[in-house]
Image (cartoon, rainbow, N blue to C red):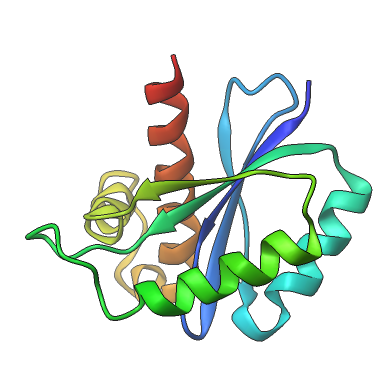
Length: 137
C-alpha cells in the first residue's frame, strides 16, 4: 500500500501529516514554510508512494467559508497541476487548532512548547488525517 498525506494549509506555515504505508497510523511529519510547500510535496512523492492528499478545508464555526479558503483553493489548483496523478480530498478542519491545543495540554507539553505554532499546525494536520481515516472505515 501507499501513504496518505494530510495538509493543514496556512498563509505562513503548513502542517503535514502522513500515514504509515499500511494506512493504520497517522503521524505528524513536519511543518513547512508555505512558500516551499509545493516543492516539498513534489520532492516527498518522489521518495515515498502517496496515493492521496487530504487537504483541510477551512470553515467558520457557523459552516460558512473562512477567509483562508480562497488561498487553499488556489494552492490545490497548483497542487493538482504539479502532481496530477494523486487525487485530493477535502476535509472539514473546523476545531482542529482547538483540538491540537487540547492534545498538547493532555500530553503534558509545557507552556512554552505550546506556543510553538509550527507544532500546532503539525498536530492539526494529524487530526485532519485521523478524522479522514476514521471516516473511511
